[in-house]
Length: 291
Image (cartoon, rainbow, N blue to C red; front, side, top):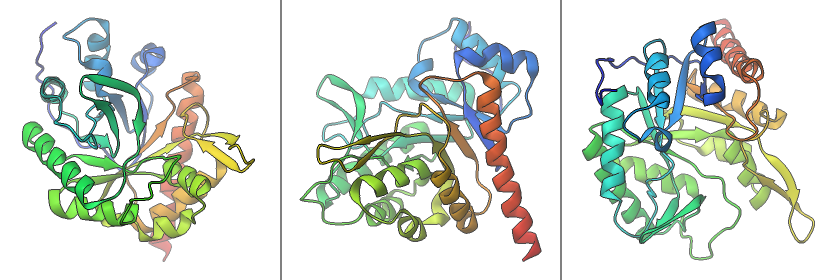
């Protein structure tokens, strides 16, 4: 298969989308579901060809696409992996995604890659490093990056600013946008004992280009306190749906992804979650018109 394509860029509508999974390739191509868009994890398509690219090309010809990276290690203290960044550029040039996003996290140290997205202390030094990395990515890809707020399970004593302050300053310095993961806010609020609604009220909504909704697992820490795990392995919880409605009241309709990466359900169940998000968006639009 050729390593380039004539696919042109197409904007993502302010509707619900889902992650593109191999389990659903045939459901999508045979059924042509009425859905706004699809998102792929960049690292799953960094090979040159084969069946994954054949299916992705067919899907991309019919639907807008968002590209979500999980391996750049934006928050790492060392330099970015130039080879990885180069493969990312080839992929972005090939499929012309309307949106590109990465995580506020680190996942590598020297040549060791960790199968996790690890948290950062919010300090001046970390801020400088993250901004330098975002500048490099945006300069290389020649496109804006959306930075996703993390889900975390520990807090750093040396942190000198809030997460929202940290994100706002990153946007100011780099011109990047933000990907607001509502489930991550709920997970963090429970794990760290803060008010998720207040966090969302302070979030720089004017810079949000995409929203994520996902499921979480309920657990307890060693002291018996509630501990939530952002596992992307189940339907979106009711508290997260409530927070999502609060977010839309500030942002207006935005492209919204249903994240379901583990224990992937049948297509009809995932599609139903997307339709639920579309219904919340439509209700918000109706309320806005009525007001």
